[in-house]
Image 1 (cartoon, rainbow, N blue to C red):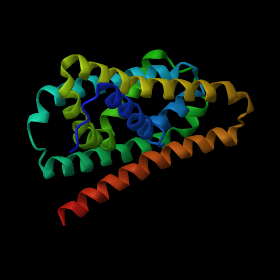
Image 2 (cartoon, rainbow, N blue to C red):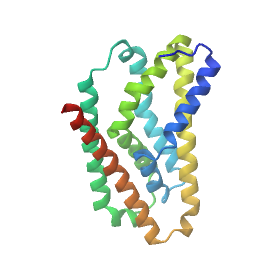
Image 3 (spheres, rainbow, N blue to C red):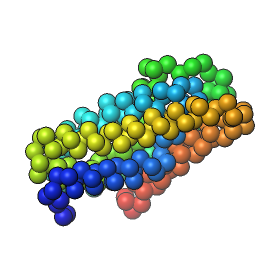
Image 4 (cartoon, one colour):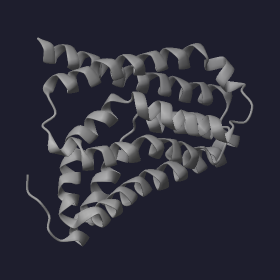
Length: 209
């Protein structure tokens, strides 16, 4: 791994890597656009829920996990368990599709919990931090705790900015969305959860063969 010794270059690379990840549609984006139809602040609240899981994980890697090599069976377990949970979330979303369409305004607590729940079961999120994220944290260690804290804050702000803007845009455009489009959004969310889940479960099985 090539380490970047200039903190400004490193933080700029953090922005680019973080944005490249957040711009790729995934479970958190799916749940954001699902909740955004009921609340313009859903994206910000989901990002806060995401941060509640992400910040402790970042500090755990910084102080503990970066000292060790992550065994292959841990990654397989994350893929298998996380993938199955994501498929389950997709099935639940499908079963509640009509109730979701006719649901009242999304509460702030519900959006935060959605961010926590979706992040915690996202195998891709955990694996990213055990691989790419850990490499970034090892680099951040060169700049001490202050440099690492700047890295953590900038990374999360990229998530926060994107999901806040995405939810606001969906909320403002909902007047143009008929029931068919809203149902299509729900099916998109189901496809993302089931698709990502199936990918991680199959990846786990292939690793075991």
